[in-house]
Length: 378
Image 1 (cartoon, helix red, strand yellow):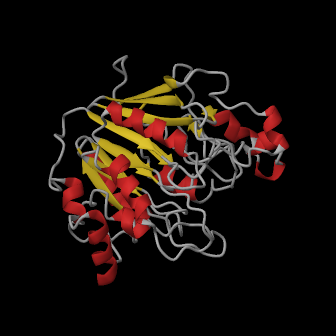
Image 2 (cartoon, one colour; image 1 turned 90 degrees about the vertical axis):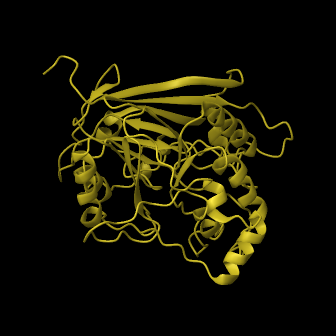
């Protein structure tokens, strides 16, 4: 069961801030469930631009476009707030108020992943906001455990909404979820549900590479979910379906030029961190060899870009279709923020963002689909 750690004082402070209405008002009807056989629309966003260290103008454009897409579920991949202070002791109410107005109230269901900028600050993350306990109160509660199943660690859990099973994982610290999650995924597959796993720090990326193929990537792919979403990297990346990596071998990948895949061909990993956090160039663009991904990781990559964006999943009984929308917000009219991390660095002279030279607005950027049944009948 989802655990919420708050003291009586924290609860009173939160209720006073939010108008004495708590989670029930945010959900309006916490027991509401989507029909199993109905098509489900899921909006995906990560690394949003709330706070003084983000590109807030970009966030405003992304959340407006996402809201107008009217998804049933909002899946947020973590890092809601980028505040400027070192080791903050409190979470300013203005941040929680904006999260509620833009990322909570418009959506019937919300599933939130804890990001490193949301958790309490520490020596390696001195500007973390410490807002998670407040943010955590605003999402949709996890489903409770039934039977003798092992309880998931704190901030982790699962939720079935309509035809889709979601698993929310915490990467701080990372713990192999197999023991508690594998039985749940098997039961969900037996019911014919699609399987989506979400965590903050990616298991695979070309943005700032860390070798996780024998740990996180292997553990997740062994569970055989259809999709794994993550944020953390302020970019968009989508990989072709990947199998279970084997030590000393290249990554097993199933490619499709049409980006149409068959369920069971592997797990598609998608990094979506374009919600308004500033963009940091990919390691290979910076010439940073120690963090540049190896050749087989690039070979498995289907598409990537530095851009503000969001994703809409349209999930029916037989097809899971994903569309990524590029959002070009234009320059901040106030002149107070820039979409680029350390915009004055010389490296930007040779790096082009996806929206550079393009008009303001929203446009389809990438599309893929997973078919439950082989259209040939095999």
